[in-house]
Length: 548
Image (cartoon, rainbow, N blue to C red; front, side, top):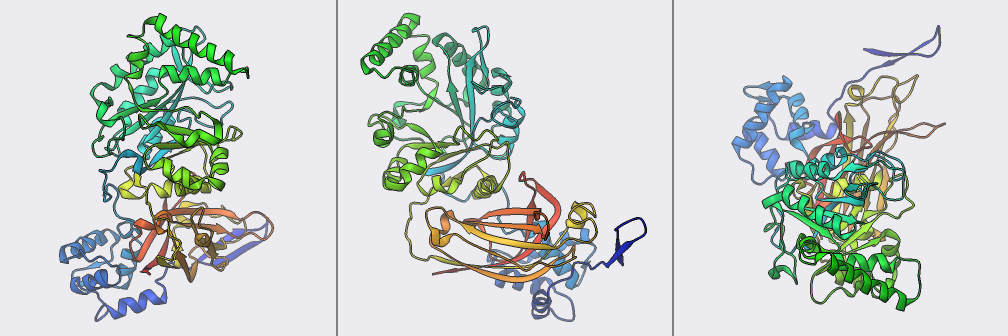
């Protein structure tokens, strides 16, 4: 069979089209575990246990695999042929990760002991300057497993209502009630673990009162109200199942923040303004405004008092959430890394993108994670390597949106990871014939990298050779990674089409949390730039994990 590419009006280039074939190592494995050209249930079970490391497997598990292979037309009552074995290895039910929904980590520690899948400006559909505000990105984020949603609240033009918008920009506004309804209806569609709603409010006391009533009415019994029991430690994700938590500054702290950000540098003037603001709250009716709004808050957002020098002191009387920009984190991590880790043992640290990321780009999340930051807030509206890493991180623990924060920071090598990329297939079904090259089939190569911020020796990348003019590339290349902090390691694999004269074309990516990878020969599904799974494109990869 040939594939033709039209070069000009009268010239056509033709290429012999190959099919996806099992690599030689796969053929050898099949021969070793089968007899007479067929692999029986017992032989397949031996392969699954010895090579795939699935110690729990039994004959019913293998029979289920054989049953699924019937749809591929490669099943035989007395066993499977080589083609059926190869189809099993490349099938969706042979993923390197456990099935979604299987939460295996202990979720009974305080909330501050977990990384939380966190969004930034969750209502924006695009850039930070003039994009549309909508409930759509809120719904998409929650259905992707995001557990922390952020809403910016501002007075409407009439001053009588609160609305959601990105203040000081040309972004459009969205109705607050619609946003609250979107959270309520989608919060627990993919995970029963808690959703945190962070309210960055810029509201006067009368509108805070209205918001308090709206939130209480909308969420009802699902709204978690903090008791004295949890004043000095956060409840656990297990105790907070199917609950929505509100995180914002209480009215008094909010006013102090507003004053501290005012133009004056005279401390005595600031103190008088704070006192006047607090008196204003009392005059507005303390019982119905300040207290009612404060009672909604289960995660108190603290002030960054004292700047970089004293911001990590915390509050001895209660647990808090502290927010800081990626620049602050970068500065503090250089000389106060131990203080950051110590702060996150009890309190919650939220990192947000710097304000100059107008294009909704993101920063390296590993810098925050390695220092214990539980809420590394990301712009979910964009795409790129850092967002892929975020999506990969929260594939772990059943995709529930919360991962345990490891305390180990040893620099000794703990694990050797061997990754062998055999081949790939499916691009001819996911992309048009001339998508990568106008006059020939694509020239694919794969790049594998491990990344851990703060541990430079764990940050390594390799790439395969380029397989020229081939829709079904064969690389048969093995890489080895020595890891010191495997708990935070992410294996990222990117496939590109090589072009000598222009930028290489993106052909798919995946990021896998090392803590979740199952050993053996696995089918690795590839994703597009936005993190959506490609329908057919996938790699055949062997994973070997050797503890040290």
